[in-house]
Amino acid sequence: MSSKFRSGKKWLSVFSVLIMVIAFGAVNADAGKIKMKFSHQNNVFDADQLLAETFKKIIEAKSNGEIKVTIYPGTLTNSEEEAIEFIKSGTLDISANSGGHIAGFYEDIQFLQLPYLFKSPEHYNVARQSGVVKQILKEVGDATGLIALGIYSDCNGFGIASTKPINSIEDAKGIKLRCMQNPLFIDVYNAFGFTVTPTDWGELYTSLQTGLVNANDLGCYCQYIFKLKEVVNSFAVLQQMWTQKILMMAPKTWAKLSPEQQELVRTVAREAIELTDAWQYTKEREFVEVAKKEGLTVTYPDTAPFKKASEKVYAKWFKDHPKWKTWYNEIQYLDPGARMPDASK
Image (cartoon, rainbow, N blue to C red; front, side, top):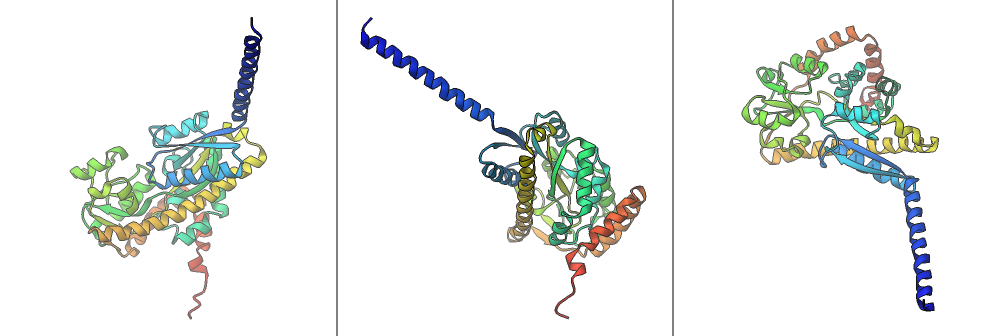
């Protein structure tokens, strides 16, 4: 065997070892990272996607790449109930789940979705940091066995989109409204005079198109991102509910984190939520104006009769959940508009 061949073979062996070392090192480096699957049920234009992208960007930067996040918009699960089960099993690491769906595990979450509980975005933002909300989040975690990272606004409840204008509470009579099949939601809309009609979310477009239902309770922006504005022509701004979503994490994933990483995850979740809520309020106002320009009818009914109709909903649910009355008083005290004096007087 020639010396050149032996030398070449030697270098080939050395090269092969180096490749193995580099590859093994890369695998080990990657294995040391914490990988998270972040799932939500909506499309990439929804606030859930912004929340996920913001969380991913900040957590990866602040963890120096030790935590990696992959986002799955509306693809990994068929329902929010299934997503919760996937989180429990550790198949998913983080998921955004509607408060209405969590009610099956923890009924008191519905307190936050009482009609006209929050008076403004400012009121909601202050109340979200309150002891009441912190207690509710803890109890959500206890009831579901999951880690509740935070709470943020859903697009439900900003108004009523319909196939005919709603100028007053009287106009609600006879309108078949699709809403989440949640007992509180049903009570609220029945009190307003709507005929609540069950329709699967995936069939809402065709149900509006065929007249099976005449209205839904999603925000104006949601009418656009889900193409529903093609089958409705009116939007009534009522601000009747501030429905919520809860950002949940799998306990198995949480256990993998160091105490410092756990604190980082909570901090980043809070930052992502604050940005997402601010963006969502802005988008809602923006698309109300878009709707006007495009010829949709936008109305601003007097909300006093709707608030009056809500009183029997409060009476029923306060009777069944006595602590809600105390919670309600605490939340109302936090309304900046109610507690601050008018400097112009």
